[in-house]
Amino acid sequence: MNLTPRKLNSYIIFKLPAAYICGVRTKYIDNQKCMVSVKYRWINQNPFKSMFWAVQGMAAEFSTGALMTSKIQSTGKRISMLVTSNHARFTKKAIGRIQFTCNDGDLIDDVLTRAIESGEGQTIELKSIGIDEQGDEVSSFVFEWSVKLKS
Image 1: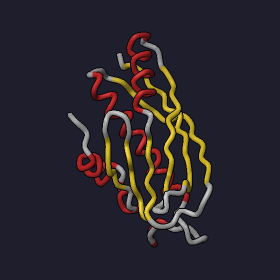
Image 2: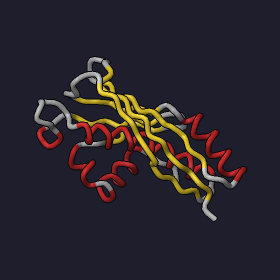
Image 3: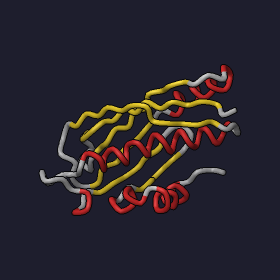
């Protein structure tokens, strides 16, 4: 199955309703990158008149996870995936529409090849950068994913 933004957004509705209510939407996915957008609104605000950090985290994580899922599907193998850690950096108030992009498709290919060839669990750090409408970075997230071939 080829993942499309429409299919991913349907997934968000049924499997990640908090993300859907907060406005997290997939805008683009291909073999190299995934772009997820979220707009600052009343439902996702913090007391400081910007987007709550956890909403940014949901969008950022989804950009890495959707790309990972797409790559796993393309292998035809049964591979489990799990976030094992993350860290974030916030550099500007997140207001307006924020676009989170993960450009790590090649890194995912490498780690999946190692996991399939070795049969051992592997870890990978995937980065997602949040950019506002003015083109400024508002936050960056790094998620460590663990992948393992299912037996």
